[in-house]
Amino acid sequence: MADKISVLFLQAQEGFGADAAVHADIIRNLDREKFAVHIACTSGDGARVPDSLSILQKIPNTSLRVTRFAPSLGKRDLGSLWRATRAGVALSADFAALRKYMAREHIRIVHSTERPRDAVYNIALSRLTGARSVVHVHVKWSEQYSAPAKWGVRRADAVFSISRYVTETLIQMGKPPAAIHTVLNGIETAKWDPSIDGGALRRELGVSSEALVLASVSRLFSWKGQRELVRAFALVCAVLPNVRLLIVGADAGEVEAGSFTAELKALASSLGVRDNVIFTGPRSDVPEIMAACDLFTMPSFEEPFGLVFLEAMAMRRPVIAVDNGGTPEVVEHGRTGLLSRPWDIPGLAANILTLLRDPELRARMGEQGRARVLELFTAQRMARDAGEAYERVLGRR
Image (cartoon, rainbow, N blue to C red; front, side, top):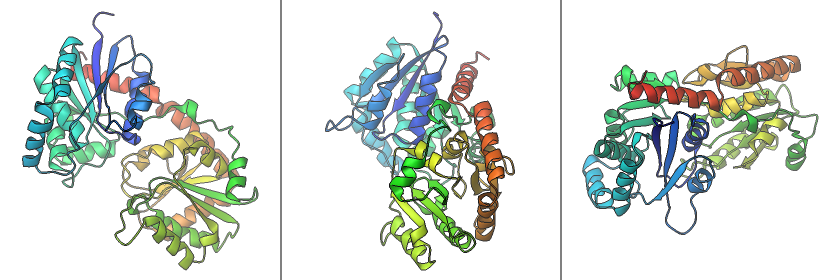
């Protein structure tokens, strides 16, 4: 097909977080009859192959260019941004080579995250080559974000938003609605098989087959709601003693006096439920975690979307969460889970108890959750929406 749209994805981060995973799923599933997919991925510091490069280079039907990117911009002011741009970008041989590559390959769209360095590279390359810039926003947008990030989002030809909630925050910050394309997240459902047996993981963690199990999977920091969850869990244990809570994830290190994990452990001890709460640390076997639990819970505050809710639902697990942010766009209260008000610990505990006491309700909500994911939240639908948005950005629709 002679008039394929060439899209270049920028990946300046060495790590592979949720935003990179979303972009990777779009890359895998874009219609190759319509799009030629290119990736510029960081080479890292040379000491090891970055996680992002290791994963992205395995995606078939792409053209990948390993690139040295300027140092991370972090939360620098605009003066520092321009100095870093002159020193680390404008004079960079890799930047010049990437610009030539874009011209040679007729790149029409440059797609990046909203992270400061990625967004600045996106705008610079787009302006110099005539491509259209798409900055993909994965977070609630606010004045708290760095000057480089805000600069990139404001100057982007188009912004992709992961939820209607995030779209509203972008509009409130002054981005014209016509420039925003809401592309709801999706997942590769083949990775989430409800027939997986969670028994082995229960045995590994010392959890009996008779125990009721809650799981919460995310980075450990205050906005994810683990503190409120432990408090609600103590109320649950007072009624149903044979319950376990799995708290899965890496500590985000936000507590000055120590780790947030240590604070949560101390809280669980003070509430008398330390033996019922299992802190696993980060794990890669999330499907097995979901298979081992009876329900999933993450009472995060102003969650921009909640990919992990989709993962739980795809595994036929009902979800307990909070009714704000992007969560209600994912979890249907009363059908695929139960939502309580933010910071309402008794309400959170009551919802947990409702589902733990009713296995038939859990099963029904689990079935409805998986059906919802298969209908609305697949990676294939997400990539199709992204492709249609690219065409609108180019004036083809």
